[in-house]
Amino acid sequence: MKSVAPVTRLFVCTAQKDEVGKDVIKALKTELKKQGLKKLLSGGEKRKVRVQTCNCLDLCKQCKKGSGAALIVYPEGTVYGNVRPKDAADIVHEHLGEGRVIERLQIT
Image 1 (cartoon, helix red, strand yellow):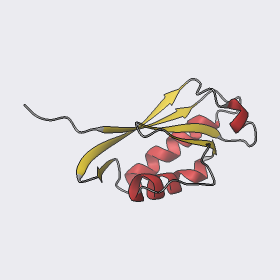
Image 2 (spheres, rainbow, N blue to C red):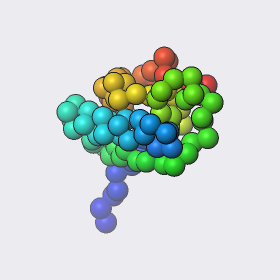
Image 3 (cartoon, one colour):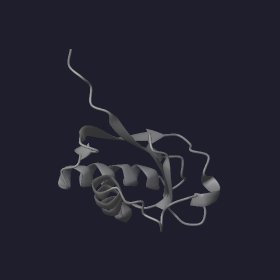
């Protein structure tokens, strides 16, 4: 029986009036392809990365501080707020590629 690779999911809220969440999703998918991290090695095992929409993450207070979207990295549970399309490269490279949390975006 073939084993199934674990999946890292990026849940992006798309409930903003200006629909910035949809732009963040497009930018994340583009960066995953560009940086070759749609499948990545994490702890010696292959992981798939999926970018998924969600209607609401109940983090509106955080996102109203700016014009970005909320994002949760699952299963680890890192939460980012006020994410804009320009932040996609950092999320893919630093967080997914190198395992470093991006403090300027993190919501604690």
